[in-house]
Length: 431
Image (cartoon, rainbow, N blue to C red):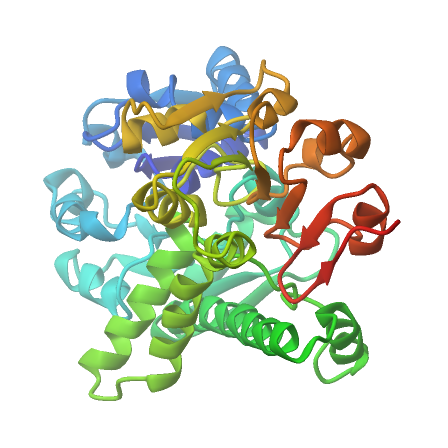
């Protein structure tokens, strides 16, 4: 098929790479705010496993072509739109273009995270004979290629059999292991995408509330998590307490769902509470540090491992580290931070500061711990999972480890002479 991809989001880049990989002829029109020259240098794109190499391969093979105008739409079967929520007006201008109107057989695939009902609005701007479907972006950042090419499910919002057949053919190469399409009306697909992330966020925030209660009661939350997960009605997914979640897509979807509920006149106290809990949890490690030192933090030095909102990405959008840094600096704490990928994004966000030293992929993570009083684990990159505990014990002046992702064994850390504080977990040094 001949496919026109519009956008510079991760979802657009992934669609362009994957669809051209399986033989479709793809014309990619990046958004004007982030042309290919900028995307080519973007850390988040280069850090995605396989994706950047596949783009380069598709360019070389000729199945993927960069375009700088919309006219080639006249000869395409599919217009795949993957824009950010802030680019709704650009989507409207795109579907109103004359090149679309001269192609009556074109199918619009809306892969953007827009308000519920937006696909129908775009449809009204097109010619009456043209069709549109909603195919919400379900990618996981850090696993974009894998989640597109080996999907667990696609939410296909579609109101006619001909459009469904065309989308199935477009994505046939990624639907061979088992049936992954869930077909429903367009509005239902758009709301379902938001509802999924709302449910996941609710589970995380609920588990964080239980972890706080476990801390107060002197209970190790890991026992509680294991007991809850063993119940078949609950399961283990997204039951890991931590120091807050972030990320552009997850956070945007929650805000979008809140907006949908508010505009419908059904504002959700539950969703507001979920978002409030998450923001509070971003300061959890700071509060534990405050408690350990009795509020006397001025002049202390803290090492932080991890700044990205999740492993596998270079992005820090709404990441817990941003809230944490502000709290630490407000108390006169110096920070030494290591992250394998996100240091450039962090430096762009906070600028150059005398109270921040950064260490990146080429540096030893232990450099961040030199002269530090405590270590905070914020992002659970695999490089941090099995540290040299005796070395850390020598480096950290106060021998304090604050585990924001509960990836360490408290009793083992304590056996190495360190004080361990996790999210609902703790252990003091053993003789």
